[in-house]
Length: 122
Ligand code: HEM
Image (cartoon, rainbow, N blue to C red; front, side):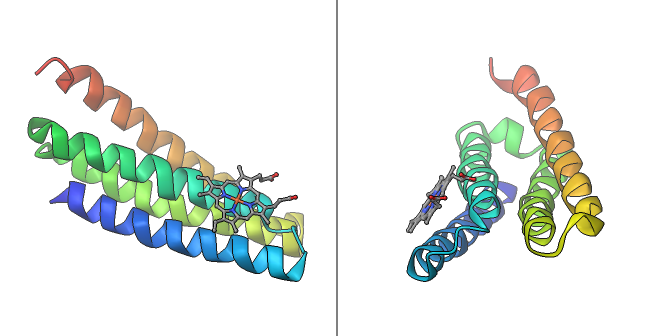
């Protein structure tokens, strides 16, 4: 279940990130390139790969920790690029959003590390 939520959220974020890339190219304004990159990589690539792991190793996907990890990663994958976009367009007063977003992503990846160590030999 969490695997499917993560993969669905991931493809939506990837589509948004890629459309933002097209708009950046059309406007020839690359201010949002770092936000675009982090949305695509953290939200599009990592989130999909982690969801795929839960799909391939159902014992991992059934853990309560996996649900916490998946939702945290989804929240972080949105908050982090939004925070980066706010900092690059509106200035350093918005750093807190990028900082909190990055910390949420790090916690989610740390939880994923614990889950992989516990379940990858199953
Ligand atoms: C329709 C698809 C995409 C378009 C049109 C697009 C467009 C762009 C553009 C215009 C830039 C800025 C280039 C510059 O600063 O000179 C950029 C940067 C970047 N893109 Fe994309 N992109 C697409 C998909 C992706 C995907 C799928 C990923 C990763 C999974 C990605 C990762 C990056 C990275 C890492 C950068 C460099 C960011 C930086 O320099 O701060 N892009 N992209």
